[in-house]
Image (tube, rainbow, N blue to C red; front, side, top):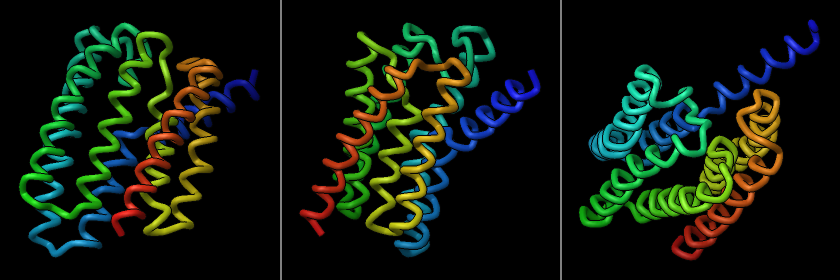
Amino acid sequence: MFAIAMKTSLAKIVSTIGHPLVTIPLYVIVVLFSKNDTKSAIFLTLLIVGCIFVPLISWMYLKSKNGSYTNFDVSDKKQRRSLFFFAIPFMILVTAVLYMTHQPEKTTLSLLFATILVVVSQLVNYFIKSSLHVSLTLYLAFLAIPINPVFGFSMLFLSILIGWSRVVLKRHSVKEVLVGAIIGLTVGSMMLYFLTLNA
């Protein structure tokens, strides 16, 4: 019993630390302020984090609080549909603003492929509930590799731990984790190819 409790506790810690709503905004802020002047970094942060992640976190919190979502991870396949329909328009809008205001091409492409990943996950969700934790962590790893290979490959390793944690916590089956991994690897490698092509 003690071993099972420890395993579950560790899985909860890994799953929380590796939550995309934690890792991705932090990564975005650090990269934006290290690669851009302060004025541009503030603008891009307000646009990406303020117009995508803040509304999304607020939506998930409210839905979880009023019982529409079983949990903050939105682990129910049917409940997840409304999450996609809420998030995708924000992502498309911000991507369009980045393009129309001539922001750095790498930033625009990164968000474009992130949007593609979420759209693919939405379509796949009609058949199987893929792990967004795993797919988005893998995507983040591909974003990081060109900037900091050590951090990027660390994220690849973290994605394996996250997949394990999602199965232990019974939020996903092994099959759902593998589907999430395939989506993340496919879209992430495509994004990395286009970033390299336009370097």
